Image (cartoon, protein in one colour):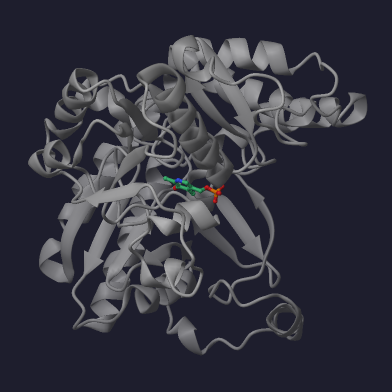
Length: 413
Ligand SMILES: *Cc1c(COP(=O)(O)O)cnc(C)c1O
């Protein structure tokens, strides 16, 4: 692959045109790298000029099984030709089986199908509040939910109400009340915050957007004990950490923890359609009765047909095993860059948050240079970049990504 100073490579006319039209007609709520993806397969994407890149972001883990996984595409194609949408006004023949298979994989009684991750979080919050009033006996409108500092749970009005990211939150008030923030990983603070009106603790078992932050060992089991003792639901947002990424089906498994409610999304849609779910036992999800929650697209047969393949891909543990093995290689390689401009490496499985010495350049600058070399990654919060290649990546591809990061750091030194 080309290793010359590629930052100077001019864009072709076609790429310039795409960038221009996007800039002009699309709201500026993102700041994408100047790469125009036109096709992709497995862990490789191709831009408008025919240049190939390793995809080390994988759609923020929505593409755990890579681009164009044949089994996912085959199921999607078949279902496209059969029926794509019924609405929940009628039954379809994919939802029930998808729910049964997903519940079998996750180990819970029932699931509530939604579309995006933020919708699953919203649904989880609604269910927890309803459970609090109807099962726990909390007085009307008094319920509180405890969340962690540095959280990312999506972009809806309620969800950003308990974000501490100023960009995510500023000027979107008035905010939804009923949330208490405690430091992530601090069990004493959580214990202090729980009161008789607490209905749930909502956490990412590993905080993705915060920079792949793994809590101290023993934290999640302590949260489990504390919530159990106080009759509080433990809701794990596994939208980014779940479905194979960390080397197990769910990140909570690493700590032997079984929360009351799982929120799933991203990879559940196989990189094809948005599919999310709230997965819990009947004593929790059973609070929902007809008319009390819904979604026009939630549980649609196309989404469910894709979701069924995702569940089946995860059912024999091969992808989880791959994430563990490749993750070991990734983390070993990244640790070796510590003396060379990397100041911290966090994560688990095929998922890493990498802090770059700010003296070398920002996370964005590192990602821009990585793209020049042919690796797509994303910065989060200043000096941090994130690596989350698809689980179908090869060992050689993982090593190549690390080599290019090493080159970028050398170039910047
Ligand atoms: C991405 C993400 C969400 C939101 O998912 P969307 O599909 O973007 O709405 C929620 N929680 C976590 C942990 C996420 O990573």
